Image (cartoon, rainbow, N blue to C red; front, side):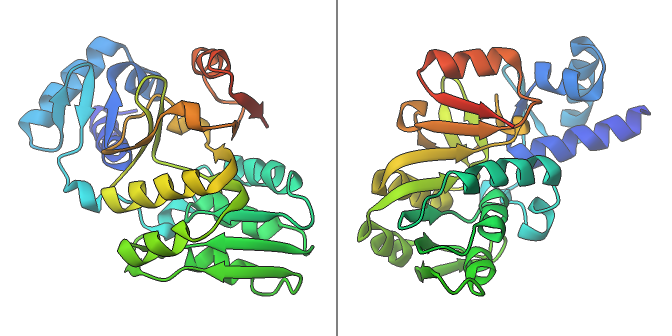
Length: 253
């Protein structure tokens, strides 16, 4: 990989995640940590990112860091489909489930069997995917449309979600960090997911391996609120061990 290509890749990763550590960039780019540090110094001089302790953060407006749905649905697509299939297989007839606006939850909606279920969501894409399934009752909350994620957020959506109680929540987030917990790209999505977590008997996080070790802009919750994580085989062994040490059931697919 040429230096210019590596620089572009680093900026893309930082903008996608909001923040990233030197160790992670070193692994992704296949170069030494010292090389990454020099790259980050150069990119900071060019105004393309900002150095932080142990890594870098995006200089983009944090409220604009939410990746458009059309981009997210093709990122790590194979891993997300595998995670979604495992999640859908755990759903039982008669259950009430909650799906967020993540691309992985959209994949879950696509493969859910057409059995008697109630599905609550704030996602236009999820509701549309479930529409042809006649045995599934779909409840979609309203609110302010977040165009990049095609989901409803804001006070109206929050109040609507607070009125419900579900058996299971299937959701994703921008970052999963062993100390900082779960995080999102902006306050509106973070607040929605906080309410979703509080509404569910069982909280199931759907996260591909790229999400671990990441601290995004806004805190959602601690990992103690998560009952189960479904992830892919690329997850780092250290990350897996730290999650299991917290008593979280981690399913690797």
